[in-house]
Length: 117
Image 1 (cartoon, one colour):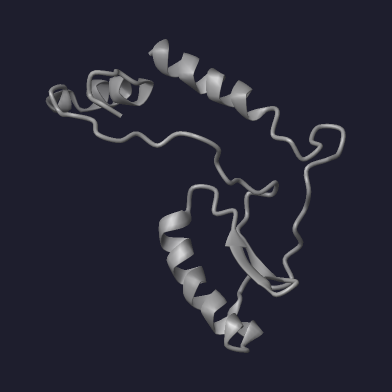
Image 2 (image 1 turned 180 degrees about the vertical axis):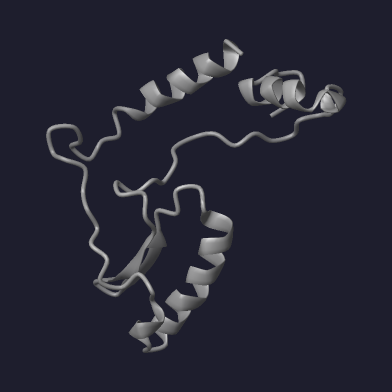
């Protein structure tokens, strides 16, 4: 994102770190976040597809660790997965039908919160 566009994140950043007021912002991450319903990471295998997901903001350290664990699972060592057997709860049906209709509302809330700072 070009620095000419002031995003909420850039505004907050310069309030906290005023010395960065003239710094150029090249990229800003935004979009859907992969949070699991129980906010726990999940890893396993389903129909030949190995997965590791739902880090909920803990991706750097946990994904590195789980990458190795999933590779070991793929090599025939399922006991390498410390998350094996952990249930994968779903969002209650009355609130979620598979389409994340609520994400734009969450994004708008945080955008408004950034602008009101």
